[in-house]
Length: 380
Image 1 (cartoon, helix red, strand yellow):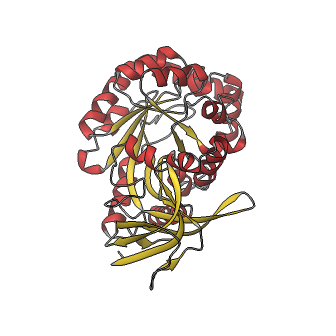
Image 2 (tube, one colour):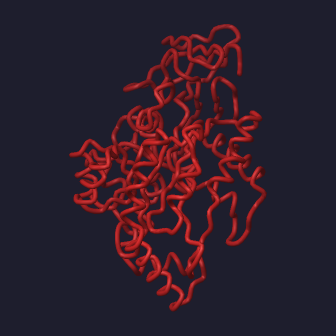
Image 3 (tube, helix red, strand yellow):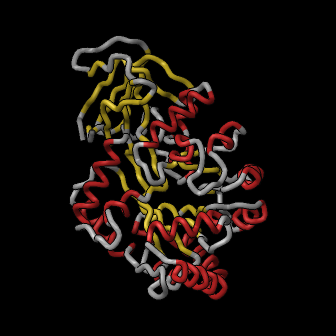
């Protein structure tokens, strides 16, 4: 942690506005903000570059990608965690909720085994050794359509930094995979399934949903309360599904798939999180609602990089261009996600908050990162 750091002559992205100014960091905390282009002795001259809060990522599968870079390849976990941590720092993410699946299917054609408990222990060992560059929390993706969800949730305690638990229901024919043709293409492409194997997999998932779904959903709601975690829904499609989410006390909806669901979220006071790749690509890879359509209707609150970490900053800048308000766009990846999960010590540039900061300039319409700081320490 740097004792003192002064960043001057920057375009500060403050809550609700951008101004030319400087800030002083003392022992990892923002101590003072001043307006004007003056560069004090010993300060870093930012040359007018944007200086914004570090990005807050609530839902990324990036760690899983490092652990399993190819099907059936299990990469050494410590190396994978460190590479993941460094990659996120290099994209401006200073707080991440690492998504790990809980709820496994050890039998059947599309079987997958448990891993979250052991992987999270390895993550925390590296954190305790001060080997990580940025701030990590857990996001447990609770697979309702599974065999072992309750047992896996029971392995976690309130000391495990589980900041977010999401209800994931991937039953074929609904939510994300209402279009069975898209599910078929996805499963065959990912797992090299033939026609018979795919049909067996679908039948098995439907059986698991019928047998375990309601119990798993109820137990996940209880587990989130026990762990002190924010509970999120996932892929809500209809107003009726949103009403169920609201009944569980959910205030964060990940990737609603229709405008009707997003409108219902707004009516129930539920924040909507959408994928940055969706916004950049102009649509969902699953054929669901486009993030831009929700943004234009004022129904988008938070962005997540999902499966492309570098998409987070770019998508926020694109939103700022769409809305004509850069500060508003960047708030969807800083203040809004931080506050949605109860982190009020970060997510904006203000005295007394963590000095998690990014410096960037625009190059050919793309934000180019120059520096990243976590608690005042440069990490990229």
